[in-house]
Image (cartoon, rainbow over all chains, first blue to last red; front, side, top):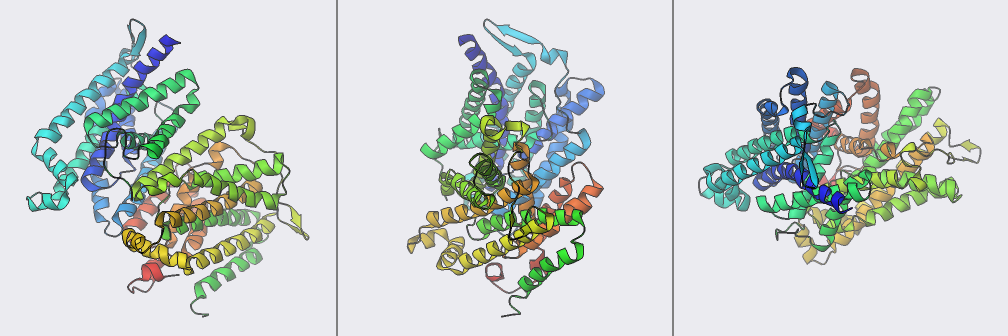
Length: 290
Length: 318
């Protein structure tokens, strides 16, 4: 039992890193525009299917699909931004419905192009198992973990040090003041959506290499990412990362100790508990109440 | 008075004419029955959106809970179907109590919380297989009864029952909107803080709207269960029951009372007769494009596009 638990914690940490990438994409656009992109899960899924496309057509490693995946998610992400930007009335709620509709379009588009079959990587390199004393991991999982960490570090650097990153943080904290300082919020919002597209493309490819994908997965990914942001309660990268690892480990423990069907449920229960007892999340104090 | 109620009268007339024209056509009547089910849910969704100011992506939860509650109560507890239908609505309303903590969340967070809830109920229905039959489905429960010589389980019978039910829900919606509760809710939509200051318990009012919306959705979910006479979690809690009403309400104008109902029948017929014919698989992509287009071009609904452009029409229109 102990060894099973150790294994569950280990696998949970690995998958949690990818959840963190998905959640950061949502958190970034929410920070910049106060808008939740409900199509973000589908964006990730789109990238995962690009990895499948490249692998099944050329036999290359799925990570070779990142440029193509990024090109596509960037275009879609920018299109989402431009469409949201056209909404003038009741922006907060109408943008939710709009991105929900875009999610439906993407899910069904993927269904039309790739059929409803469940896909996963066939790469022998990525499916190769490595053992560390008592725990095992596929090379795909480890690669995804390392890549996620690298992308998160890059994002941290971007937000902390680059001009655009600092502008995104400025617009997040006070849009009007940022405008007075000469920042064009629309350019910043566009940059945020573009970076969210990058995050989604890496997350999608990583997801494909370590797990299975199917067209209906999009909303579940969005909900997971949302659960992570609520758990974190704060837009900081370490906060989101810790919350995502927590979700990954909790899910993996549930699968090991109870049943795989309850995997989705436990995230929701975690989410409800935090909502009931710690409405500001585990690490933050940002107000979310209406 | 007559002119003011003209759209309603026209809609009622159309509802009476359809069985006269298509009464013999089982396929069309079947579509109309399903369209009216969607209409009931769309009405409930619009009530929550218009009066409560909340967007829900999880009405499938109430729909499924109502369906299972009514089917189980009539089959296992021997409750007569008319009572079990109401009980289905009541249980759905009860299940919405679990969502009350989410009411404190602001708009987008509430919408996502309720999306998460819908997932929970679907998983529960699959996992509690000793009660629900799990993913294998549940079929042995009574159909709608024959009362006073009218067989409500026939297509025509269930059609008329649904017309009456939708009509009653419309009247209830209008009564709530015209009451002081409706006034307070409208004020709340303008400024929640200001409304709180004058002593309106905003959260309580929102809770009532959620309860009412869940009750109506559960009621129609229960109706649908007894009409189809088969339930499985993937069907009863299908995202379709959340998506179609949203599109219907937005299409018809969710700030109006009749719009969602007319929109639901139109959208459902369009989906089944046109979209499915073009794309047998993935036909929801057309609905997605339609929804996105409506939000971008005419967020107040198609009827709003042709309606009078007077100030405040968004709230005053009925």
